[in-house]
Every structure is written in structure tokens, then in C-alpha cells.
Length: 72
Image (tube, rainbow, N blue to C red; front, side, top):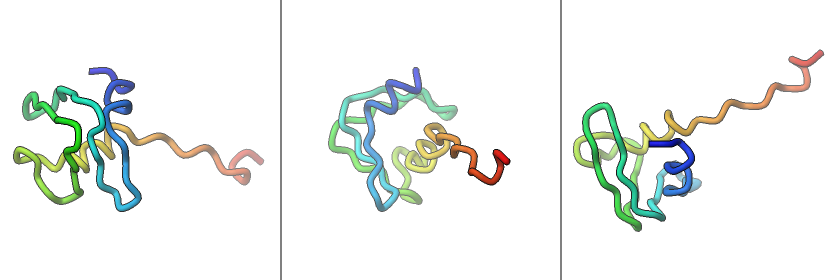
């Protein structure tokens, strides 16, 4: 599963939850799962026994750009 496909299938809400906007099959270390459009994943709430919101946060974490101070 390419990260790009996952990024395109989910939208992250301001409250930290994720909503699926495109059907996708995820390859998670605990197994394969399908997520349908409209499914909302909330941190701390298991989806098929897995905190997928937390997993998405970890998988799609983008590194912060270096601060101006660190470039001096």
C-alpha cells in the first residue's frame, strides 16, 4: 500500500479524527482491513480492534520543517 494512496483516501479533521473519503484496503501489521467512504476513525476508539486513527497519525506523520533558529 503506497502512502500516497492512504493520504488520498483519508481526510484528517481538526479534532484529530480521520474520515475515509475513498474506499481503501489497508495492510496493517495485524491484518488487512477495508475502510469505506464515510467511516470516521477517532483516536482511542478501536476499529476492528485497532486504533486506526493513531496508526494513521503515525503512518502519515510529516516531519516538521526545520526552524529558522536551527538553520543558523
